[in-house]
Image (cartoon, rainbow, N blue to C red; front, side, top):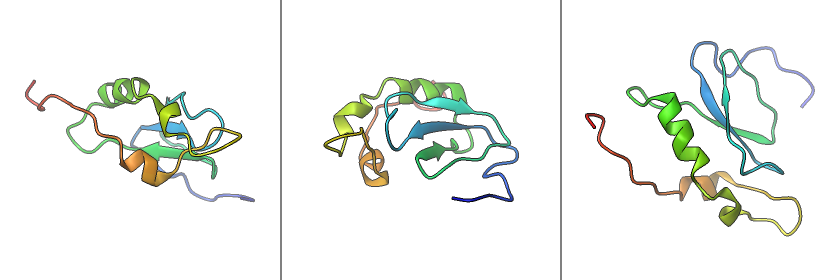
Length: 91
């Protein structure tokens, strides 16, 4: 990655999670934001509170999904397998 010309999100905040190394330390990305190739990001769908989704991400044991033998690593496929129970929007 040499350079970027546009932010990934100009308006929506997101949650970032490392793809390599710090896979167990999600954090909030404030718009506008850019990422590198070792960071996944999640913009919550309409109606979902960023802070609630961030709390969910903090309570997932990401290290259990480590796919490496050296530096901790996550893949999109591993993240997509995560299943969490959440209350309805009304709750």
